[in-house]
Image (cartoon, rainbow, N blue to C red):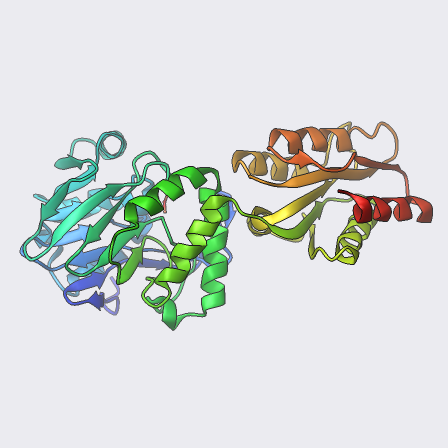
Length: 391
Ligand code: FEO
């Protein structure tokens, strides 16, 4: 075991004891290009309390960091904010040491989820308004259902003004520095937006409810489950969440496409240029070149979405089908879009793309653009004019 792994004190007697996953690049489909962290926190009070664990392969890192300040066998309370295994799968390893620890979890879904995964441990289910004293501190539990699982909850410690927020306000970012102001703010905010777009987008209503429940709290630190701990930019990240949860979109366009022999690509270029001529900034994404999670991040706050595919075997290109399936699951709001593509014969793909856009809740703003073979100069001019003139 690596003895250099130490706890990091983030407030008096409160330590970060999590793990840094520098190499993670795919989090069940979410391309985590900057890795991630699994954050856990240890509070040294009359009752020694651990808030969350880490993903099981990182259990030794967690235990080592805990052991750098206290014997893990002395843990009295473990708060399990969320059953998803990136936070809970080291729990059975921690309880091998902390044999008498009481495990706080949400009622009923946390209890159900932990029992299903780890069997009958010493659980203490809690609900909205419940709190426990751990000595000088009281921990208040606030359920945040569907942010992003039914069991999710956050914990507030008023004595230290710390919100232990688990997945909320986090980002997938591996870093050696624990606080927001020790990292590049633009990078953190991009990754926080990417996290929201790819994980929390369908749950705007629940996010607004959670923000309202947390609204009256005096918060000095937001100790997240992933990425940095917010201390300098708390208002900024709360404002971002408020905007993102509201589903507000900007006057921007995203053009995403796949191409076989370049004709759909020419259409994508033409559409991108036409948006720009109209004064609407447009981003151009070849689906083969950009991770889907990054494209979705841009789609999330862009009002317009154009999706293009040629026809292959009477279908759209499979990467575009995957993109549209992913988009549909995220239930985007307040977007307008259209389908485009070239074809040799048949040409079914564009209609199929349009149907999927509708199914994803995108309002169709232009009739589908279908061009046989290679687009001519006149056809491209017509495409440009359609973009320039749409209402
Ligand atoms: Fe970070 Fe939903 O787990």
